Structures are given as C-alpha cells and as structure tokens.
Length: 283
Image (cartoon, rainbow, N blue to C red; front, side, top):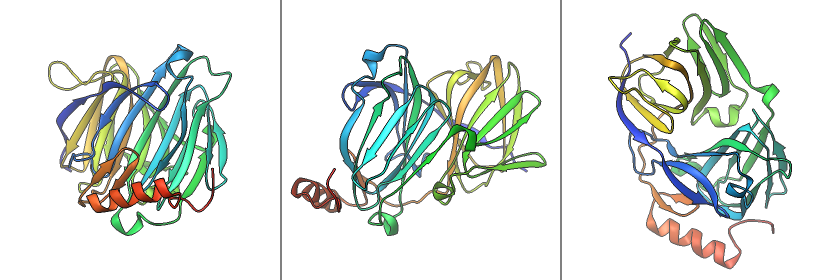
C-alpha cells in the first residue's frame, strides 16, 4: 500500500451565520480536493450570546447537511413536517433535494455549544429528488477503539488494520463517510482508504504530526493518493473529524443556501423560493 500525503492545510475563518451564530468556516465549493464536501462549519462557544439566535427558518436546495453535536443541544423543524432534537454526541442528516425550509435552534438549556455542520454535495441526478431527514442519537453511533485511539463512526465503513466498523447513517454513505477520531498524546492510527476518494481531516483539538509545525486546531488537512493514511498525534493528543467521498467532478453553482450546477438553476431556485414554489408544504 502507498501512503496518503497531506497536500494542503486550510485554516478555518471566523464568521457568523443564521441569526448571528459565531462559527469557524472552511468553504470548499470550488475546491477539487474537498469534493464532494462543500463546507465545514464548527460551532463552539461557552457564551450563549454567541449562538442563542440559532438558525431560524431558511431554505436549501441541491445539497445535504449533517449536523453533529459534541456538547449542547439543537432542535430541528422543517417544511416536510420533520422535527427532532439531538444532544452531545448525536447527529442530524438532511437531504434538501428539490427544496426544503428548516430551522435549527439551540435548546433552552444549552449554556455552551460545540458541534459541526457539514455541507455535502448531491450529484446532478439527485438535486431535484424528494427531501429526506433522519436523527441519529449518540448511542446509535458505531465505535472502534484500540491502542491510543477511539473512532466514532457516523457514516461509511472505516478500516484500521484487521478491524472495520460501519456507521449507522446509510443514507449518507453513498456520497460521503464521516467519523470522529480521538488520538491520545503521541498516539497513532493507520487507516486503510480508497485511493480514488477525497479524504480530509479537520482538527478541532490538539494537533496532528506533519512537518515542523503540525496541523493544529481549526485547520483542515487535505490529502491525496495512497490507500493508507497514518495519523500521528502531537504531545497534547488530537481530536479531528474525518471525511471522505468519491469526487463528483461536476460544476458547482452556489448562492447562499442553494447549490446547483449552473447559474440558471440558481436563478430558478431563487424564483421558486420567492414565489412559494420551492417546497410542497408550508413551514
């Protein structure tokens, strides 16, 4: 097996979204090395004023979202009649398809919040499919533990040596695989991975060993080539989201909450939203 290499390190940038929610964002709408991942947002604050406004009702078309909470709680409501709540360790998946309006609001008892929202592209053939939604509670996630590491798997099959584990979110699995990895100080894990897939590691605590400076918190490691990735933690350990998927290699047109293939399709999405034709039901 050949070793996969880190070819780029991308820093997250502070931003605000929704009703003023403070986030750290890595955008990859036009980034070939991230395809099919479109965006990674980290929400992290001990101060309720940083996230109290949440994400009031807003539309989406042409993409999927995955919200994964490490601490605190989020409530979901959407125009298809779905509603749910996840707390520390749980995840919510939504495929917007042809159109959905949803909200994600912090629970009233959340005095601190730490979580992630991932945007994952849909292929051209599925952008106008029916919306779908699913909650995945923390105790439904799959785990794999070994010497110096713990891997929590949300979606996809992940292999380390002779062992493998498959996450419960099969709906996302056809497009992307997502896992949460914790490495002990100076710990190491060797993952076997499809050489054709994009493979990313978003560090949110500690650091990965790489060159002289490593990969620190709020940085994304973009890799290329190879069927094996050996991840080593620094002296303070490492916590990171692992993401991978087969690149779609399709054109991306993006405006706000809409992700399509052409500017004309974006214009149609805007017209449909403004005329009330984006969704089949009211919010």
